[in-house]
Image 1 (cartoon, rainbow, N blue to C red):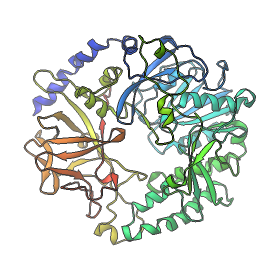
Image 2: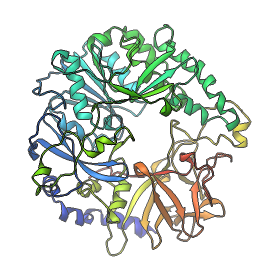
Image 3: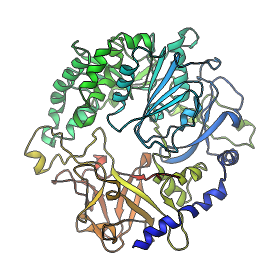
Image 4: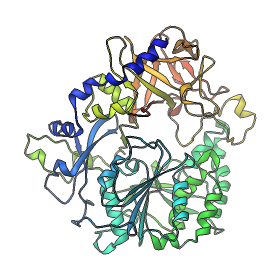
Length: 583
């Protein structure tokens, strides 16, 4: 199979002719997109004038189970006031962004705000924003999560903080789909509350969350959100009821340390995502040594426990005791492992969208609300970048269901190869199980787990690898070549193949009830789920690919029925497209 690898390289420069013909330039694609009836707009609640294409740019996004084009408005619009764009210097305001591999091109829609990106991913990624004078990208090794980035920024800039700092994750739309309006509104409030319009979401002097979802934690009964879910996934079923009591002590201890010895409040309202606009004065209410001590604690269990606690107590760290959200509906029945849940009941963080067509005069006007707004309280629609769901968008394109033309441009950034006449269409991917809360997978009901009967910090890395021709989750991170797969179409579905060290091609398939690497093709149907996830169904054996928490090890199995249909993560998988290292 050496010729296969040589062929990939030889034809790399000739691929994507279809995309090039369809959209030779990004602006051409945007111009043609105006006639596409299912495109999306982020709209203004104030202006009824159409934004010109010079003032907006498109991004391919995934909402529910659809890849769509979202146009971001560069004009200063907070969705509430008619304020003009401010002239902001580095000393006035800064966006502080923690990035690993997220699509940061949304920063091009915020040219008015100075931004610092702490980049732990590819230094030359095409997903980084365009260069500009008020943008700094600081390359760092990939260690820690967003809380590490925020703490380091505060400690290193304690004596020269901007008047207002906005702490953000690499893809802020995940916690705030209407992010552009929300961040402009939050920043305006922190800088000058007199011109910011009505307050919302728990705005208090010098502090504004950039999210619309909130959770109330109760440390006395141990209902502290994802920390409880992490514990449950490491305890056998018969001990899962003890997770709250086990977590309670650890959470309170870490919380007290982060608060410099102050007692941890029993009730805390958490702004999901830890995205805040904060004044310099509020940050400075806590001495620098407290932030330094927090860094010294380390990331904790599964590399995220400190971050989960900080997510809950950032308002306390910033001097806002007893903070709670406002303008919200309370949803206690949706609180899961928390004490209560709330969501904004106004348009804060909502992405107001409507179909539009160039030929329909009525459709060329912005709408303040859409039919989807009426259903907002019934469901929560997450928003992903197509770069985060590249395989899903590519597969819908191949099936003729794609509703995005911008994807025809973005796909060239990934290891995707069109049919060449010799080789069929194929792409390079990683296969990952979908996990909730935990960063590691643990067979919690297996004999291996039952021997300890306590919460274990052990686990398996959530990436599917071939190890001695078996298919499993490894116990430690492996080099990319050991977890790389090629997906291609077959008559009955899709093939997943690998080239081993002997240059032999093997196929993902079933050997009895064990997922294995076979010497002959085996087809899989990919059953569509929400958010770009899939179930794998083997055509020949008529079995589902699944983990099994009742057996030792991180092996994958082929099962006639999904063993625990209520536990989504055991048989839900995410196919991650591999980006090209250089273009």
